[in-house]
Length: 188
Image (cartoon, rainbow, N blue to C red; front, side, top):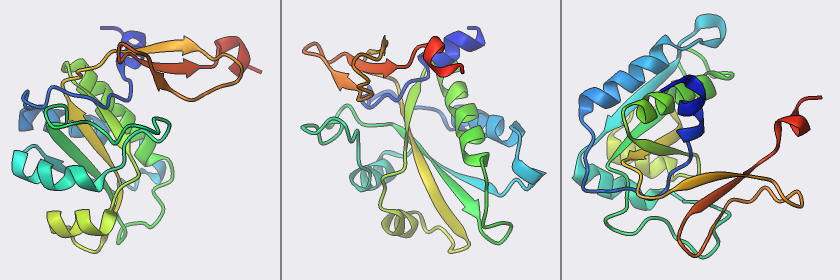
């Protein structure tokens, strides 16, 4: 798969085949892609917690908020939830400012996830204190966000924006539509 295909396929998936697990080695491979990514000042202060155990997944899931634009949807139902998570953290003892490293590293991780046949969603609306407690994360680490990962159970399509409406939506067949600005609109 070429880079454009990977980027097009790298969507925010929110429904998964929960019964299809993801091997720890695949998740570790994707975190290694983050390790190899550029880092502002080469500080490399980001850390990662890999979770692919069902019992921990069940504790993490209710602490996440899903799809703000989908007002009548509370998130994936049982059987459609992620089968793994990667918690992205910053080591505050190394640096309180991680600049753009979180974006660089999570994009690398998500492209690796897609390359391996999975998908995911970067979630920042999370209950950080409770997640820290459940995962026994040291106070020197600040949770930035969580990557929810699994085998996608939904189709996501890209549409051109109409009437300046950027909100993603689902149609009657549960196809997830993501409006994108045209290339002509973003190059100035």
